[in-house]
Image (cartoon, rainbow over the protein chains, first blue to last red):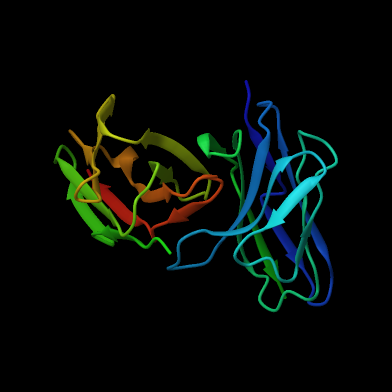
Length: 113
Length: 110
């Protein structure tokens, strides 16, 4: 079955360490996205990628980095520069760049201590 | 900037009740999505609408483009429907970005 796989589901890191969240899809979707969810707030876009080897900043890109070396994979690195990294992170993909038939992953809950 | 407002923020119902969740947005859109988020966090896309009405099982989604309003209805609600329901809209030419509402927490009691 096609879908999006995020790993791990829960992640703990010490303050000051970089951490990479994995997102893999086998839907053959061109576009992939990373969102952040905080309690009481709507999801906010961190980065998105419409094609391989290209990505764009979203609304809250500071302190994050991404890569898109393969169509299937869009890893997100939370760097030590991110001031408030503890959050729930969701990866999504869609057909083309129009968020048509969007699929979402199960999310990764990152806790920085 | 497109603002997305959902109401109510929290909703508690008894099993079997008919449920309505509302979503209003402020500017023109190309599509509106209804999403379901279960306690584990994963999100499932329920509907994508650009006009009219869609039905899937006990779920019905409607949209009124002129009034910039959409509703999600659940008929014969069941405890397994308990989740956060999120409205999101895409607008602009590229449609690459969704603007999300804050979600409606639905609890259905047996």
